[in-house]
Image 1 (cartoon, rainbow, N blue to C red):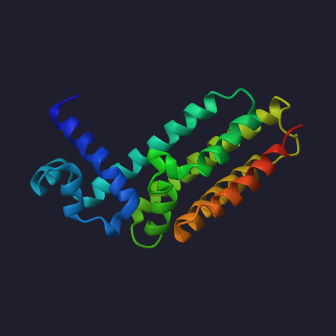
Image 2: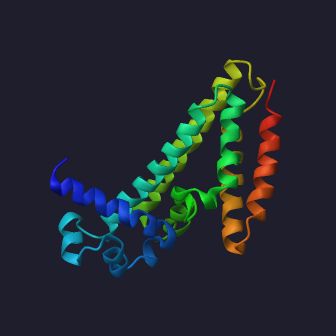
Image 3: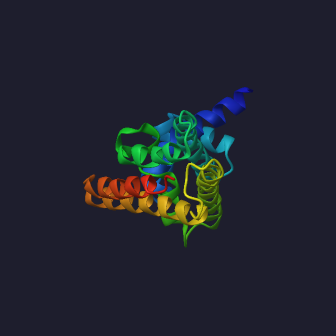
Length: 196
């Protein structure tokens, strides 16, 4: 990795938590300077503008969460247990460093919906990838006779994501983890009901 690539990666890693916590509009140049310890010239010498940094930071945040989940999911051998990773992880999202500011997909989707077309495209892609990965787990579970054969993979994926994102949003808004716990208890119960 060249010096320039290392510097770009450093900027992405240092600014990613800031963008996730404060959002695109709420993150200022001084926030970026403070997070990186670099000057405006150094930052913009590596990125054309704030948009480029925000998109790279979003991709980094999503990759961090994805890698964390993938590691836990791959340690399970049964499809139902793989799905149970989601309520287990998100029940404790406030303790997990890559989720400390909340779910980057939810945060960015909400903010970029009407204000930032490029980030909206990135968020849409990330949520579609997440949905498809859950669908694959469910489909494999059906094929392996671990999940009931009449189960609809897309419906299950949408329900899982909706309960997670809704629970996180309510808990963050109320500064109380009871909403995420209620949502994850319900999700856990529904996942157990998928067993053959």
